Image (tube, rainbow, N blue to C red):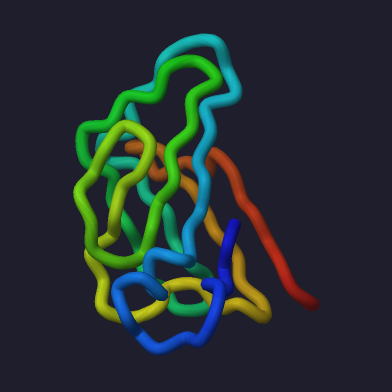
Length: 108
């Protein structure tokens, strides 16, 4: 997780894309992330994956701002920050809303 984009938080697309979460398929089998979600506990913002297949051991970065989706980077197309850089929790859920992974940072 890169919750605090480098430099000033000026709201530019470059700054927004400087915050991201990496999602990695740790298995050897491919996984289709279609309709999986990534949610911030603090801001309650949710990103829903489109039709994206991750092969075994492959990863993708989920950026906050605008950009062109590729197999390595996808973009939430937001105009405001998603992740609280002091304290937050990112929750990844599959298409059946079951928790697949949770990443926490900051003091509780």
